[in-house]
Amino acid sequence: MHTMKRSVLIFALFATLHAQSQMADTVQLDEILVQDNRYPVKFAETMRAITVITAKEIASMPALTVQDILSYSASVDIRQRGVNGGQADISIRGGSFDQCLLLIDGVKFSDPQTGHHMMNIPVLVQDIERIEILRGSASRIFGQNGFSGAINIITKKDFKKKLSAELSGGHYAYRSGHIALSGVSKKKWGHRISLGHTATDGYTDNLDLNSFQGLYQSSMPLGKESQLRFMAGMQQKAFGAQYFYTPPAAKFREYEKTLAAFGTLSGQFTRLANLTVNLNWRRHEDEFRLWRDSTHKGVNNHVSYVYSLDANLFKQWKYGVSSLGIDLRSEQILSTALDTHQRNISAFFIEHRLPKHKVFSAVIGTNISFISGYGWVAYPGADLGIRLSALLRLKFSVGRSFRVPTFTDLYYKDGGPSSLGNPNLKPEEAWTYEGGLALVMQNFRASATGFVRDASSLIDWQKTNPTDLTWMAVNVEGITTKGIETDLSYTLKKALISQVRLAYTYMETDQIETSQVSRYVYDYLKHQVVSSIQINYTKQLSQTFYYRFMERVSYPAAHVLDTRLNFQSTTWGAWLQWENLTQTSYYQLRNVPMPKTWVRMGISLRL
Image 1 (cartoon, rainbow, N blue to C red):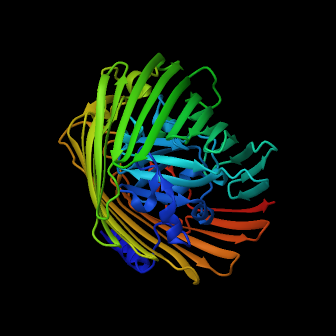
Image 2 (image 1 turned 60 degrees about the horizontal axis):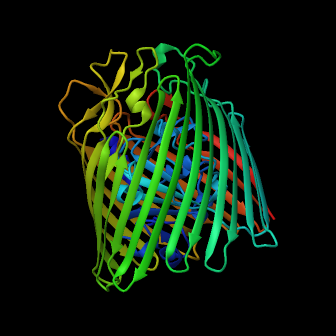
Image 3 (image 1 turned 180 degrees about the vertical axis):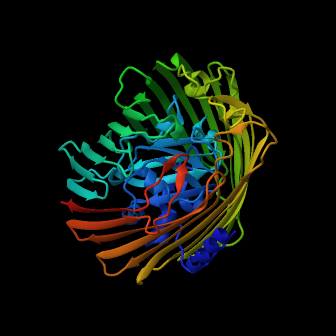
């Protein structure tokens, strides 16, 4: 109770100053096109609960990985095993790590083995133009796996001749380097390559990390109204995984190596209508060891492949905007613990947005999919917006979500008493209802959203009592999650304190009377506060403070304060970052403590 009182006090201190989207120009944010439906719309016209994090905001954050960026977004729960991008589970609105969908430039990057690998992507913070976070059902828009929300990472596509580099170091032998080069050939063919390396000895035993990643992008115009794009990337990681999956009493020294690679060919054609076609390939390799130094005992090896082809066509006409789409997908895995499996998914989308009206706006659509082993399924949904005045809007949304079990859910067996999959699992289903109010003024924003998610056949890992050794995958019926999200924002263009933010999320999930011990369903953030303030000392020198309050159902509440000091000139910059100034002892996932404090600094060059 005292912890909550302290949180409310800090909440009130920041309440007079807040910025949901930390941009100097709120009009610029309103003009950004976001993917809240099957076609892009202006952020100001969206009828969904969407957060946009821009490159400018990212540059001011005490964030060195995509996971760090997301940790400062309300209603997003980052459960890191260690830091620096080693491994992290992403949850939106209390969903599990398998119920969130990740996209890069609109192309899905879900992992069929397990959601634990979803963030194994070769995208550095320096590669990001913005991040769009859609909270709530996303299955109608993106298909299965968009159960509780979706995260769309939009990469930079500025191919002008540029060179940028950065070196950084800090506590726990942290060292990192990044270089990016871009340019345009005589035939207007743009190229960009980004390379990065990060390593640390770890802030506690067996939490070291060594990672390398590279991303290549190119763009070629096809006449005046079309273009062809290619993107390919690779990420390789090796890290100590102490207590990631086993309790301390087991005394294992877990270790993991992953290798992720992908290639995407995209075409955009706009002559008669807007047509986008994406051809994507992804390979993920994972080696897990119970004993770090053993290559033959307690070792699991997994290799998964994903092949996909999707196309989306939308046309604006006098009756609104109509959209048709198709998504063909094949998922395969070869594994020592899961055996060999494959499934195919064919999804068909149809959606229509009513013509613009000065008061009402509405979208209705559905996704109809055929999934091998499960047959046909449909996830319909609708959005409604009502403009009460030039500044005030009401938003409503309803949608059905659907998720098939991962290969780990279905088939995992490690030969020991740890975990056991269940091939008889049913897919997860849910209906999500939400409504909200948004106030948008020149420098001030305020919004409040309430939601209810009625789910059936949720997949959880359970055991009969706490002393049992084996977790088993089961379906849980009749789980309802309710929540309230609030955002306030205030931005000043020319002031010492230019950007301030305050967001609060409350959630609760109905507890079913059972003797079973749950591993995931009831592990969520009940109270979450995210607040930030940016101070501009000069045009070149600024500092940002981020405060987070996290009260998880399964762990003690925690207050964490981070800061970043930035100096940026035309050609070079420097930064100092101090995480967990409060030296709080806290956990985001069982058995793995987060660092009590971490200081890092870096220098950058831009030519």
